[in-house]
Length: 159
Image (tube, rainbow, N blue to C red; front, top):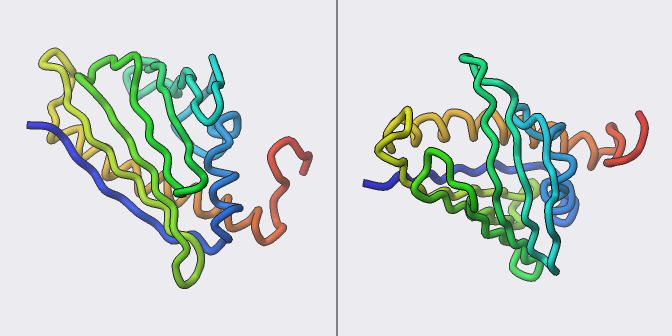
């Protein structure tokens, strides 16, 4: 049985601002609390191959993997998958953005399966992703709303 998650949040900011901030990969270590580093390995048009490295977990393990993502601004969607799958048999992620009353809805849909040798099964990873997505989306919402309101510096600017 594979895992599936579907999480969304409304961000009180314009669609293009939300898109630009959340798709700025180099900003992810600030935007997300779980990522320590992002290394862009290759860019080809709208497709980016990159390595994500997480902060050490409670056991001191540092998880890192290579993903590929393609952002399509014309449809306000991003399709991504892990190239180095680690404990996953596969991991596919779709981000969708849409204008809604009050701002922009950002939706993350993840489909995956854990390897039999993984430290957790599909159900446990589904629970983990659902819990963590709420935390990360709220963190992102706060940062995007602050920047959209002119309360935070844009990427690359000094506070």
